[in-house]
Length: 301
Length: 307
Image 1 (tube, chains in turn cyan, purple):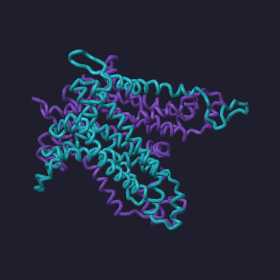
Image 2: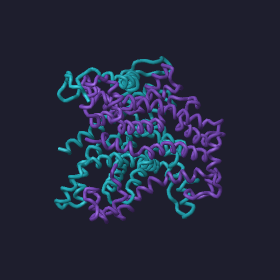
Image 3: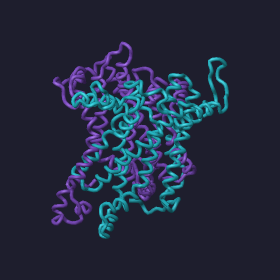
Image 4: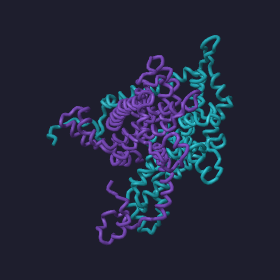
């Protein structure tokens, strides 16, 4: 091993105080600046201009923001994703929590099979998930059509305007329940088993162990999962975009804020206003994520 | 993963004869049929669509309409369908597959390398500006990737990068979540003493990283790599706006254009190709997850989500 020659230790903790860290971090930061910071800055720049057919591009100050905040289509989109996340996120996380607890309980036959199988949908691209469910929802050769024909049922069309949001919620739940389960399960795996033994010696039952040991251990991961799910809901795009092809009448061009921003820029060539909508959504997303975090912290005290 | 939950039933029954150190946690409990059945409902929910896809990938277009969704049709056309997928439009599917592989290898591979280097740098060196980096990167995670898409598109379009593979690869190179995961993982998995002793032996910092630290970082790196591979393989929004030329499409956009074909005027519906193509798209990823599960799962529970 090391020869006993003296070395110059730079810190007592063992972490070296050195600029070498920049060399390791630099490449990441360079690309990060190019694909995160520069577009954000450019977006802010775009949002204070307007391009018109006559007169070209001119500075309009906060006009685009005023327009976004009074735009009924924007509010309709925002309201839709808010409703979506209020219903879908709790259902998905509750399911994920149940499965994680069940697998961790050690009382499941074939637990490792459960773990990997429930996780599998995460490996399925959202495009494929939306296509697959979209076909299954279909009344022509989908399962819904099959059920109606075979059993004489009249299951309502999941692709109809009334049900499309719930149908998308189902797709998103299917895609991410396993991912969230795995995050929660991994957190349960690092709980010190001595705690369970101590609880058992004190006569605690399964339910008590769950509420007193497991759920507190899951608080952090659950918070992270909640915040990521909220962000995901606000950014909803792929599923509506794919289903738009299968059910054009149910999904408007302003179905979700992202879909709206996309339609504005690539169908409407309104790049400045689209950038503004994206910024407003970014700010709202960050604010909501921050509030959720704040509330969770307060509860923890 | 020393635990084998499948054996818990036996373990409980024979608990008296086993040394008590083995499977301490499981020995007290037995498998529960009720719980297994209940959890099985979720299992059915997650596997049913995949079963549907598998079954329907074996049907001809006519068979799709004539048969029940969860039963095989009379003609088993899987091989024909695969051949059709691979030859449709002069074999464009294969081209899309190769594009996807290119984006995944360079994009996800590069992203993993950058995240590993940076996470290690942040975990193991106290350099000025470290805290600021953390705040900026974590803050940027909350900014929607899709919200960045419009300005990124306009920027790349000015740089002449749209409609080239670079438009997909460059944004794929950054994974803030990967950085966060590598950071926590490096802090937990690489002992400072080991780095210190490599330094004592006269190794440079980068040599130390690649020869001493990298093997210890392997489970975390594989985890991050898999998540980056999934993100790049499944990427939809970015290629949707960046690419106009079908020759550069990844599989996701290719499948979408095929599914749209039915809706366009004069377009021939090719549902069976969309379904079989979808199956071919998910098989490689599922295989990777199954083959590498031992590695990425240990990586996830060692570093990733620990508080």
